Length: 326
Image (spheres, rainbow, N blue to C red):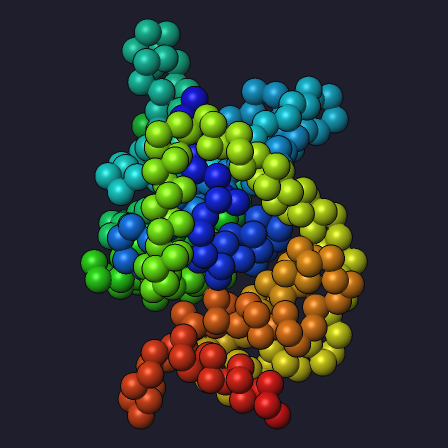
């Protein structure tokens, strides 16, 4: 089994780690988009997320990880984290006719695709901005309905497909279609560390991992367990986290000040703030939680302002600072 670099050992990139923790705590926040230069740990962080996720209960033998119903044998399985490679065909993504059974047994049977495997888990798309348009359209349809419908060679199959999309990419290689961008609850920008000491620490840890992955992972196991326990505790607590009217007003004021389209920004802000409060063990989501998650929740929802040449991140940070001073 291939060992992944431990999440707890990632140096810096606090906003990215916070966004992934939030998505792991409350899947209703939506997906996470991580944009940045090559070599900034985007793929490493996402793939290491799997080790943080507690297992789920599923019906034994279910090809789409259904929760056990009465009479089913329940089994504990790892939370799915499924890679969708750029070159994947539509049949591989949605599923298709099982050709082997069709040829050897003369039966029409469904061979589940990546969306079936990802149900109740996470779907990871590296270089998501290069994804082919027809797959983008397909993902948008499934994300909206929570169901995958496949009609192939006389087969008609529908199955649940609810998952969190996590995408990463390099903005220099192209922008993301607005329709798909809007489906991500949180958007994070990452860059190479500017501090020499931090860069040295990144190199040391990566080198130690590549030299002896087992020893390195063992050294970070306690920290990883602490991360996982925090997510489990936050999932249990989040229903009891209160959201005062003052916090709701803070989210609305921020989105109005920034001219964010629709109400999805406010909803994401509130959900992310509540998840962050649960991770911190706080009884309520407060204004400080809104301010902490605002850049991730709002930056990708802003229209370009022809009279303001600052980037979306700077605009959000400026609005947050003005609210804090008010």
